[in-house]
Image 1 (cartoon, rainbow, N blue to C red):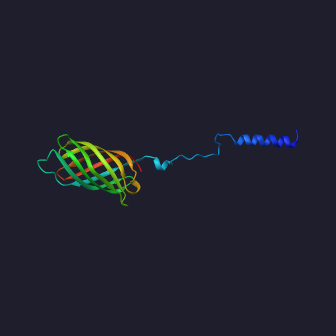
Image 2: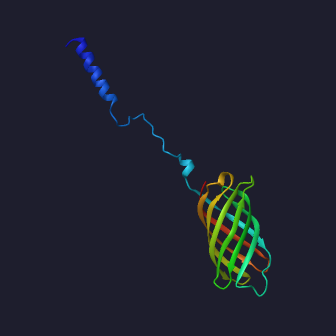
Image 3: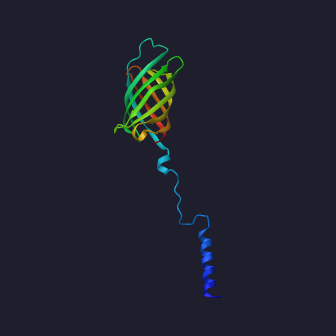
Length: 168
């Protein structure tokens, strides 16, 4: 076989290898979003609040304003402000407004809905907290956490734990 025949065969084989649509071992394909941008993170911590004493006898639905602080993962020591409607008769509660403000000023907006049951000094409560955006790094926040706690009508304080997940 002549050199030109070998060269032509080599070029044909080389060209065929270059047109193979399968990825090569060294080819790296990046996902549309990096893992850090779309990964859910655990969120947990504790909160303490205070509120004005309820009027006696309480009306069927109490609008209660709570202010306090939380120590939560991804926020640190955050300021809490919430306005809730508490249905004393039905034993339910839901937030009208709820924000957590991180030390750097970023705000995480929250909605809650839950139940409460009387105890010796006030109520025990459970709720589902949903993260629904905010400002700064929390502008597109989403997630959910379970809340468990109690409120005292003697001290007009509440304490609760938060356990769930958040994406931002």
